Image (cartoon, rainbow, N blue to C red; front, side):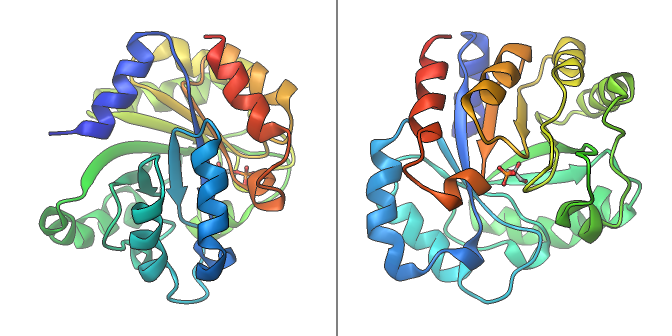
Length: 248
Ligand code: 1GP
C-alpha cells in the first residue's frame, strides 16, 4: 500500500498543492525538537523532508525516528547519499538523478540500497531528480559530480522529465539546489508540468511569497523550502505558502 504516493497523486488529481519543508539533520539539535515540532505541527506543512548533501555526524539516525514520533506531517527521507538511509521514516524519495550522467546516482547506489529498503517496510517513492542550474554551483551539483540542466533550456528539462515518466518513475523533483541563487524559471516549470502527468516537486532558493506563487502557478504540485525555514521557522513565508496553497 503506497499511502504517501496515493496522497500526492490525490492532491494533484484534485488540482491542489502541497508544501514540504527540508530539514538538514546536521543543523537540528535533538534538544530543539519539541519546540520545532510544535511550530511545524501548527503550520500548514504537508511533508517534512530530511536530508542533505553531506552528513557531518550520526544524528540523523536518532532524529528521524524522533521526528516521526512528534510530527503530524509524514517524515520523508531525501537522501544525499547512501549513509542517509535511516530507519524510522514514513517514506524515502528513491532518487534517480536523471539530469546527470553519473551511473552511481542513476542506478548503482539503488542496487546497494534495494535489499535494505525492501526489509525496512518504508514506503519507497521512485523519483526522477533533476538538478537545474541556479546561477552558482551548489553542494548538490558538486557532490553529485554531475552537470545541471542549463537554466534557460526548458526543452531539455521537459524531455528529461518525459524520459523519467516513460521509465516508470512516479514523481519528479526539480531542484535548483539548496540555497540556489535564483529559483527555477516559470518557463521551465510549466514546460515540465505540461510534458508529464506525474506529480512535480520543485525546490531551491524559494525565499518569498512572490516566488512561491509563481512556482505554484507555473505547475509545481509540491514546493520545498529548506534554507528559509532553517533561518526562521516562524518567518512570514511559513504562513504565506499555506495561504497560497489554500487558494488552489
Ligand atoms: C534543496 O530544494 C531544496 O534541495 C530546498 O532548497 O534550501 O534553497 O530552500 P532551499
